[in-house]
Image (cartoon, rainbow, N blue to C red; front, side, top):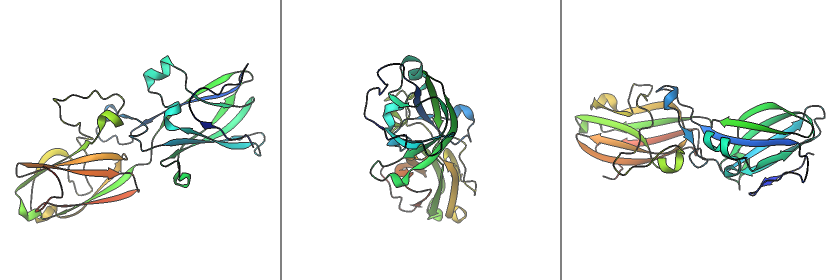
Length: 256
């Protein structure tokens, strides 16, 4: 076995002439419906990830393998942080080729729920440190919205916004004067229900289930404008790959 290392803060380089891989990671969103420029970098919390587990196997001697776990914050770096500081996530390895698989762990106490998010072959040089940068994407969510009571209103506008952008989005600058940022302006369901704040007509035709695919996991707020009356519903996406929210427009389950 290669062994087991658990990141607990601080570098773990050997005393002299280290060889191995320095691991740096960040999360990026999956959904590109608004184009590549709309894709955000997510924090560990925003990506719902508590730990990263790296399975490493020596390709020349497969019996030499091991799993190395790090708290997500140990090696998390934005592009700017990558240029200014080294990562604290380091795995000492002798020279050779290694197959590396990365698993995102939502709950460190239940690692069986780990999701494989990336994999590659890594070359480790003799007496050298390889810096391996990982842009990770969590698997997207299918979100179903079941609308009821469509005949109880005349107009409706729905907006899916980030619930805590100051926590989930490292590049977000909070402002007391601005509303919560929209997740995607062009987000549409399989039945063409929009989630970008566009006004639509109510009626029986909008009742039923609307499915949105490719949604990035996270915590959102669904803002509803029903005949000019606004309220919000908290939406938690990420506990499962398929989540359903029921919205009764005649009696919306939200706060004003």
